[in-house]
Image 1 (cartoon, rainbow, N blue to C red):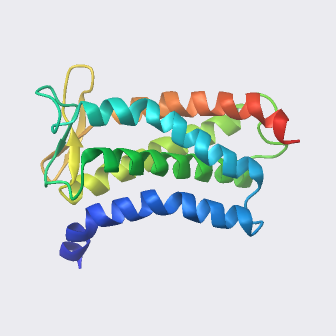
Image 2: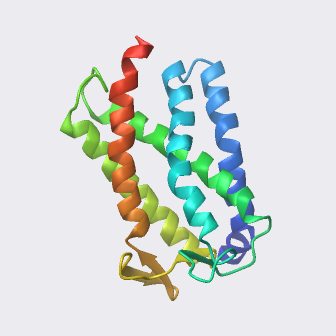
Length: 187
C-alpha cells in the first residue's frame, strides 16, 4: 500500500493542487463557503507565489545552488508543480481561516487578536511540517541544508530544514494582516 502511495505521490500532489480551486468554487457556489473564503483562497495563493516562485526557480532542476532537490524525476515541468503548490497554499490558508472560525470567538478578523494569529501560525507550522514529512517519506523532494536553513531532522535520509517553517511563520503574519485589512470590504 505504501509503495502504491509513493508511486502515485506526484500525481496526488497535482490532483490536490489543481483540484483545490474546483473544490473551493464548488463550496462557494453551493453556499457552504462565502465570498470572503472564495476570495481569500486566491489571496492565499498569491501570497504563496511569493515563495513558490523563488523556491522552484532555485530548485535542483534550474541551478547549481539548489534550495530544493527532487529525489525522483518530476512527472511534469517544475512550473506545473509550482502552480499546483501555489493552489495548495491557497487551500491551506482557507483551512486556517476555518480553524480560526471554529476555535476563536467572533467576530473574526476585525482587529488584531492574538488567538486568531496563533491559530493561523500553528496551522501553518503543522501543515508545512506534515507536507515536508510526507514528501520526504515518499522520496519526492527535500530542502538543502545551508547555514541560513539549518537541519531540523531527517526522514528516510532526506532533510527537513527550517526554511519552510520560517516562511510559513512570516506568511501567517502577512496573511493575517491581509485578513484584518480587507475584511471590512465583506460586511
